[in-house]
Length: 378
Image (cartoon, rainbow, N blue to C red):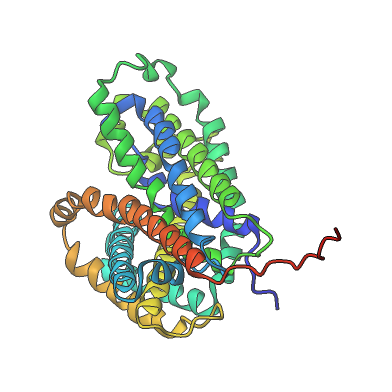
């Protein structure tokens, strides 16, 4: 059975991961109607980070992200860095899980406790990840066309409800607000591609890392821009007042009396994207934890014993750390600081350390033998 991830499957996984929670919240920032411009700026800023992650994966053979970190930074420093990235992944998966549980609880299952919803999501995630990362990639490849079609279909059907003057005036946002919105989208969700790096060790070696990264982030940007503009044109300035603007914008779409409640189908697609995002973060946490304790991880199923404990930690964080909306908002204030360290400073430092270590080994290695030459005749 083929257990390698193809380039198309990896692209689909990156798209589903990056769009997971942002499609529900609408990716609306302090820039207001110019949020779409912040998305473009954030995409330009994340290109160097894609190059850095690609370089880290290609530092040593195997494209093992965390093994490369340990080799580049050394035994103890590498483990400290990897452990920090593990806690970042656990924090994010708890946050994303809480967001999607609240979405289901508020929109559809008001009487169902959030703990029950979280248990169901994590139960399926444990089963999927124990089957291997390539199964996660196949599920993403299967779900991606449905997400693409649903966004395109809702944009077309919502044209009759759009007020194109809602996007005006353009480019009137103050520079500091534009910068704030760009930084917000850069860290969440664009900068989260760090979590996808651990999947590349299972990708087909014939596929190049950076083109796959680039195509995945570009597709995610286009989908987020389409959803953001759809929400703005349909809801206008009131888009900031809704907790789930994408769901509210789609709820007005109807064709006569026979094609209504299309938001139910959209909700299923959004839930699928959020589920895949939780799975990717859990997989990244398991890979990091396995690297810290030097566990054997040569097969896609080698991290299976770590999946359930990490999922239990995510469940605990979802219920305890983010017990209320106020606590979630308080913890959200620390996300930019943690993101700067985990998404920017650590990858840059790892790459620099890896390059320095490689050059030192190259200088200290044996010199190539000279080719003997025949003596010249006088």
